[in-house]
Length: 209
Image (cartoon, rainbow, N blue to C red; front, side, top):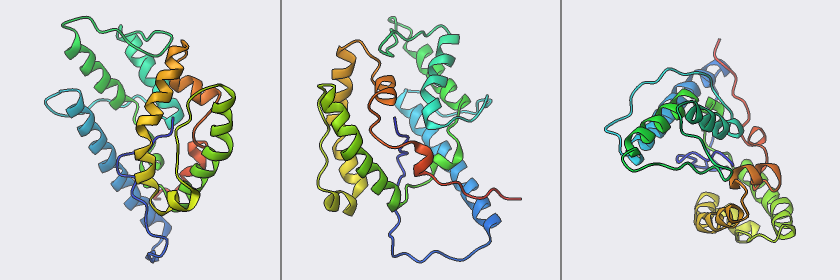
């Protein structure tokens, strides 16, 4: 599953980029990434019904492809073991405990900084072309519902909006996969990835010296 942060604003191709030293770019990006990840944790804490986000010791940084496996493994170590579809049963009265475990396991395995940055326009081109030429035929061959996207020109004019508008259809796809007994995320990653590898969408930014 592609990691698309809530803040994936697409810069206008016509915007002039300031000329600065590579180490300055790296330092600025790193500072912004820290803020973005903290924002993600703040939103997660709010969704889970926690009073606030709080510091958690980091075990290691992960790629988007590794994040779900790391989360499930961490939850499993705390007694929250997922079934074959990736679902976890929560007994009555255990909701707060599960919420705390989910927050702490997510915070312990932060997504690497480069994947928190906004997607560039070229990345959306790669996403659309992969989806229409690779994912759609694969899903059709598997007899699964295909989330629809508009024409290439229309999509690329406002990719974030159109990708978000297809979210209900992607939810229907996940439900159809789960109905077969497969874990939707694992199936899509292994059989019919909806997007290209995240590494191709997020070029590395030079690290500060």
